[in-house]
Image 1 (tube, rainbow, N blue to C red):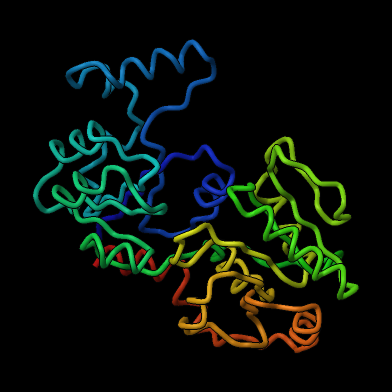
Image 2 (cartoon, rainbow, N blue to C red; image 1 turned 90 degrees about the vertical axis):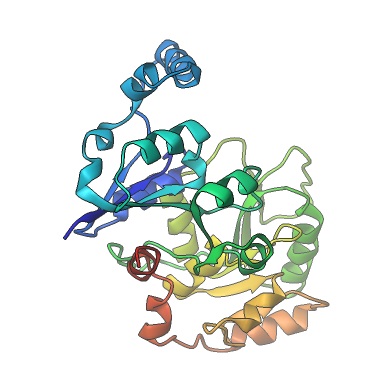
Amino acid sequence: MKKTLLLFEQIETFEQFFATNISHPLVDVYTPYRAVSSQVAHNIRAISKRLPGDFFHRYWLEAWKDNLANYDTIVVFDNAVTPKLLKYIKEHISSQIALKVWLWNVPNEHIDYLKENFDVYCFDKTYSEKQGLSFIEQFYILDNIREEQTELLQDFYFIGADKGRLEQLYQLAEIIEDSQMTYLFDIFSNARNSDYKGINYLDTKITYSEIIEKIQQSKAIVEINKEGQMGLTLRALESIFFKRKLITTNSCVKNYDFYHPNNIFVLEQSTAKDLIEFMSKPYVSLPESTIEKYSFSNWISTITK
């Protein structure tokens, strides 16, 4: 049986976590291009990728380029997509090998080009329907990870950049403080307010392993969705796999099969009393069949059909 090749950049620590923790006998994971160790090499590689023809471009491609015949499906993630890379792959594979594109982030500025030339899959149902893409549920990588017993240090945890969400986070912080509960909000923001004791302003990125550790030290995960964001988020998936409660602004989460009012609280006109009542309810464990639906194993079997 032939294998599946996944190509994606591994710049962010979550992407590195994803690549490291995939454990599947029929899946190979590569970055599209060879790594470089100096700024000079980085600049040379960047120029080479833009030159006409294949010679210089091919030089920088990772080892997968020599083994394309070993695969029956190749999935290029959106963070690695360039017309030149896709053109190279398409010209060097047989018609029996399926070349697919996975959109991890939407909207995508190249969507018209992509859907005209490739099979495109996306986790956001609304965007998929609007653009005529194939919809597949978002997934999480926990096949190889086991939760450790961790001391709980706070009730609520948030990690993220401002992106217009700061005022909502301040409002939630006030509600939490009024309820006499604890929180840690790790925020990347230039605007800073020292009135909230649980807000920690970050100057540098923290690793995804550190984020997981902080999630495990918390009773609930907080997500404040960006305007227009409808698909299943990483925070929601973390709440499922790490069995943590979820506080979210996404009312669409009520339509998912993993929704339970004991586990998920949708922020609307919420008060401290509402939050206290929600947090006092016991977490309801989900059926394994529901959790499996959002696993990497299920995603890979679906996208390779």
